[in-house]
Image (cartoon, rainbow, N blue to C red; front, side, top):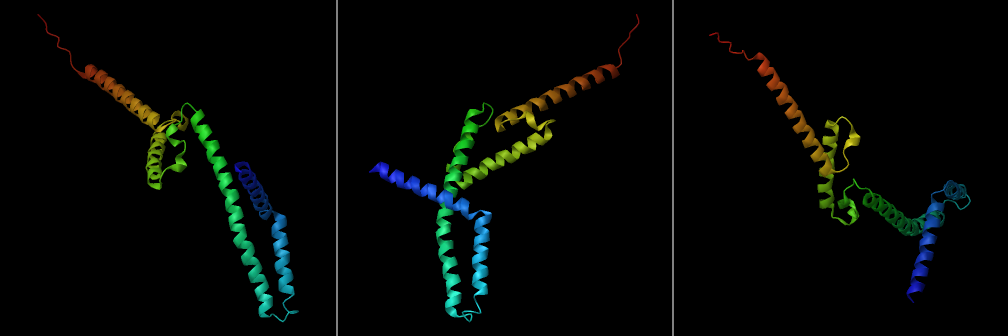
Length: 174
């Protein structure tokens, strides 16, 4: 029983994928354009009656209604495949943050918090000489702090050297 439902679901997925790809093709657009053109040309023949108008309205409404579900099904599958590929890339990279794996399951508020961290990461990366030097938020903060401490120490050394050079030595003669 379970394999039958999986098989029918798989058949529907295949159907939805094929229909959504076909609907997005040039051939489908040209076909739809020809149908609308034929309908418009047939207007004088049917004396622009209500039935003539009802044919195009009903046809387009039914097709649109069904296409929404077919395209959404195909889009859901494509979106899931992309998320799984991205999860694999995040999980396999030693320098990436594993907190991003399965991020699509987080709430919007949690995603906004993470977005703020990445905005901060972007700010830190702009301060670095190369944007390729930081790989995660934690690493970016650590690297940025290390650079700041190094610059502070260098500045103190230079200041100390300058003060010792400018300080007069006591030369007392006996």
